[in-house]
Image 1: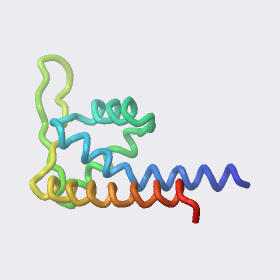
Image 2: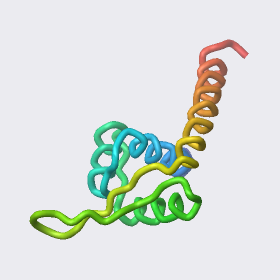
Image 3: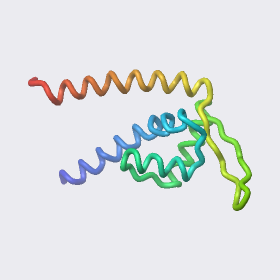
Image 4: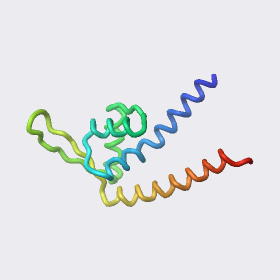
Amino acid sequence: MKDEFLDKWKSQVKKGTLSFLVLNAISRKELYGYELIEIIKKSTAIEIAEGTLYPLMNRLKKEGLATSKWVEQESGIPRKYYTLTSEGKITLKQMRNYWNELQESITKITNDDI
């Protein structure tokens, strides 16, 4: 029973932070889907499937936080590259501020005597 609770909690934490991770990654440079998956996997040890990433990217585009463009490749199929919009940069800054506040609060409550 405790393992089931823990697994559900981990899943919720992952879902709740995935947009934040993706926005941070594409804030640094244009990335295409597979590259984005690999960066998140390497940097965070979070496994993210294409079936999770692409619907998330569509939501971020719908919200006006990200944009995409197709780029032809010399060999192989075109790649869709994602970047932040101006609104995405503003939103990411707000998310980072909130994340830092949340992190401080969590550190405080987990390290201090209550």
